[in-house]
Amino acid sequence: MSKANFTIRQLFEMDACTNCRLCADVCPAACAAMNGELSAVYRMKGLKRHLKSRTGIFSKLLGRRPPSLEELKHYADTVFRCTLCSNCEEICPLGIRLKELWLSLREDLVQEKAYPSKIDMIRANLAKSRNVFGEDNSERTEWVEDMRRPPADRYVRPQAEVVYITGCVSAYFPLAQKIPIALAEIMDAAGVDFTLLGEDEWCCGFPLLGAGLMEMFADFKSQNLAAVKAKGAKTVVFACPSCYQMWREYYETDLELLSAPELLLRLVRAGKVPLAELPLTVTYHDPCDLGRGARVFEEPREVIRSIPGVTLVELPHNREKCMCCGGGGNLEMVDADLAAKIARDKIDEVLSTGARAVITSCQQCVRTMTSCVKRNKIPLDVLDIVQLVRKALIPATPAKS
Image 1 (cartoon, rainbow, N blue to C red):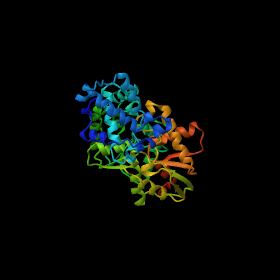
Image 2 (cartoon, one colour):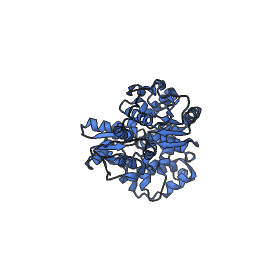
Image 3 (cartoon, helix red, strand yellow):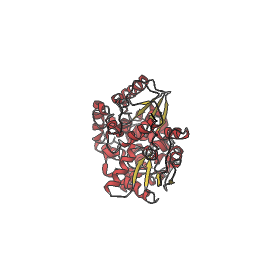
Image 4 (cartoon, rainbow, N blue to C red):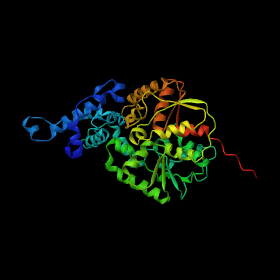
């Protein structure tokens, strides 16, 4: 473990930490597992200890030995069992950029060859198939065939004003494929000139970021940017907050980037999405990357309130304080049981509101919470916001001949 893998600012931030332990109280992994070793405060202590034992004259004078590979692997096991939800960063009274620090730490541990074995699977899948699941990348648009009236071109068009980035989860998981179907039908009804990239869409790179494999990212970034440019598009739309966040933070582009709630709100305000009454009490779960990450809080709520008959009740923890669902940070691949425990805590909070449905704006949140609901036979609907809008969408009246 080397100081060279951390910025000067990060080294100062490590020293600034006062060990106040507020981060431990809001960590979804530590709380669900009842294991303090999964908290940010433990992670910070371990990081400072390992760095001091590796560098400097005092480590030699005091006889501090570098951590063994076995010790590093134990430490890495706690580092990678984190959803990267940023709750710890949100509550930090010193404003330490903890998520960036954890990402740098993961890269460092990968270089030290101290990481969970599933990281090798992520690396292999993305290198070979260009998606995190190792599926055939030419099948990214197969979900279109499940639409009521699938277009012959599968929405893969030579030119369009808008490119819709589907994301790996919605492209390949049947449970999540209802999301791109709903968004495509909404955009069709609203007259949006859009296209998919098809097999030219590669993973956005978020799994690489979470796996400490950012040395592979450049190829994915250049491919996706070139594919969008080839379509002549000016706007890129994302129903996946992780894809949206990666493009905002790492793609350095002048393209207009819109999350699905931002697009939906624009269409609703323009009167392009006529909505029928839908008597339903719902609550809204803020996805970590869209909420704490991109600060998109009010747009989805305004969309929900625009649907006649829908009543929105807030979760006890909402907006920047929203509890993670357990689906982030590659946690499901590293520790599926822990991800399931976090999801159960989330669903228990949802049930406390009395809502009949929980709405979110993330395909991974939908997948994680739906799995929990089905596994525990809980009478609760889990919907992405585009599915909710699609349920209320008034069908276009066929033109008279």
